[in-house]
Length: 406
Ligand SMILES: Cc1ncc(COP(=O)(O)O)c(C=O)c1O
Image 1 (tube, rainbow, N blue to C red):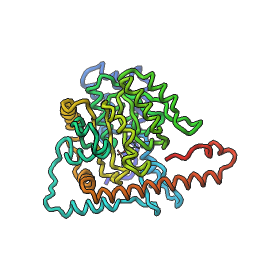
Image 2: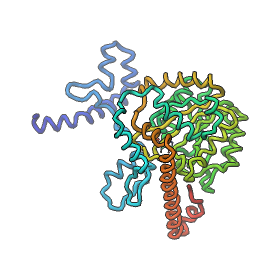
Image 3: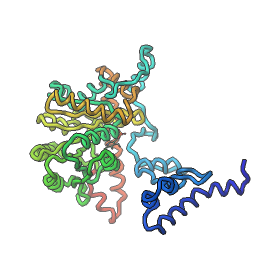
């Protein structure tokens, strides 16, 4: 082992390198990377920021990236020794004891899968488990959906809701004529990053009015009304994150009419089907209104929350098309997006979902467990609201006048 003074010097080397390269960056008229581009190939190599001086890391000049604003809360929470800590970061269901919950029906499905000796671990196709895709489309669009009956839906299994949004975003960036997506203000913190990295331009539309703690409906209609024709619009199917404020059915109808009249393309994000009201069908109503008019749309579905399959990363992207023939070609292009990204999706989570959705008895058990989770969330929120209200002082009046979110 190296002597202590050498080890100390080695430990300091990365930050010394960092300081040096920052200073060089300030003193030179152009950045080292750009200056290097003007000179010979050898000096290009020498000036490249990840080029190591002997013994130090090739990544020594790398800056510490900030934690993800949402997942970073969990990191801070895990580090915090406080006995009264509460994690209000990532939206994951907890039991009365504050523990993660695995649904009983999920445990049963997993047991059935384990007990089945004919199951193998082969790769899934690029588009995922075919039965899972069919059942997922049925779950969100409804068993009697005309789009499903007419084979106008292309569904691919993706890595939960995030992966579905990412694949959908990249598909649109490659194949859709309009590259701007309007997202609600505010929205889930990952939306702008996912769509920007997909290759889309992200703009926002007014959604929430902090003054009234409710939907900024006029602002929403105005902003979507002035969006260029053909723009993509991200809509939270239900349980809008982070506000908990959803349009009423009448307001959805107005949004639908406006969007269809301007040929705005809906991209639904359904991360909480069943969580808002306790009913899978009720929470899919907004989406089904748009499918019923025969128009096209994208749908990103997640089973993270409603089946508690967070870490299994199971979700689906569906694209509802005008005809079966277009849907076939859309699917073929989705495969070209997916193949170089992660090749094909994981088997386990999709098998759990398919096991539950295909069996009416297990499906019913799931709806009961889902309803129990939704009811408890609604009840806890009410209790928190009441507790805040009863303890509020005059300066918290704005808080208590706010309506209780879902
Ligand atoms: C609105 C919204 N969309 C998508 C997601 C993605 O979730 P996941 O990728 O875990 O399915 C979340 C997660 O919190 C969300 O709140």
